[in-house]
Image (cartoon, rainbow, N blue to C red; front, top):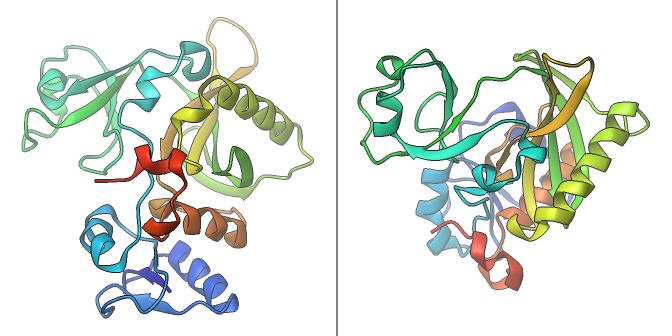
Length: 254
């Protein structure tokens, strides 16, 4: 059974069609009772956490500090863990994002006075120097391999397009991800979304690849990625707790 909110996004619609084609029952979270069989989730973290115990699924996600702990060779920029109180004290433009939940809009804030003032001072955030990504790609990873991928933005503007596996970008992305996972592979769950981008360097021509962020697969837009392969990743990332792999226990959302 695949459970998702009754009010569906375009990604939910695509996954619902694919799940039904596999013989799965697709149920709205608002109408679901006790699970009569293995249950899987695609939707937001609040509703997912509320249903997880009742339906017996586990939600895998990267740790809050994963991005900040990566070596600079993979991020191309300085990233630090901080709190909302630290942001309010900023006096320079800084890119600020929540580590996982969408508790506030990720954006470049000119200074701390522009940051939302209604958050708890201890709200965790990630602070990054401001950089420019020429293009950004969403990768759905399963067991350390790219299951499917798509471009989703160009210079910060939404521009989804499938990633041609025969293209030069695909080859470069695969080589970059292989290096990243060789260095930090055990720090991610077996099913996860990884966003990477072409980071422009103002001091030399061309670009370099860098990690944008990592996200939970069960709450990530598919953009132009293959829905069948996206569903494969989602089913691992938000499936029955009884089927969890030992290496994934560290990444279960509380």
